[in-house]
Image (cartoon, rainbow, N blue to C red; front, top):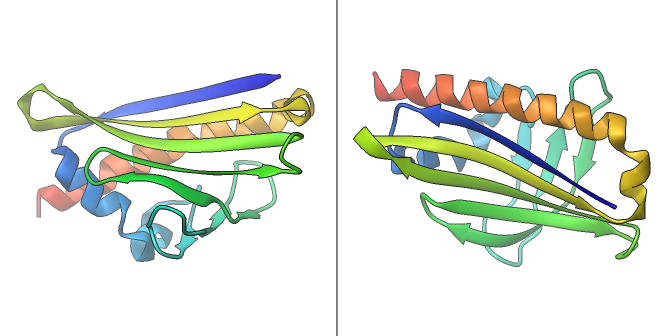
Length: 146
């Protein structure tokens, strides 16, 4: 009763440059069609309010708790429904590559009995992660060329 999405893309920029764009939540609406809005403080223990627009689905709003913030390395947030029915943890990883590049990864772990009924939503979410990854790459690479 678990599923994992792992979507990655290589970005021609340093982890620090990718991080600057990733944590600028106020600008997400201008480039990120999948998660156009994130509100709140990116601090461990805080709750964020995020709007997610999975391709082909109605917009969803979540209020995940921030679990990990390691600048230029990782962000982890997540939440649950009735503790045992469903739990999801979303990880953003910035992995340094040779020549000052970065592998940006989004990893989502879905756990619990409700996962058995979430197949369609999980597939659309994976499409959204790849969409966001491409948009982030374009945003970062165009910005670093300015």
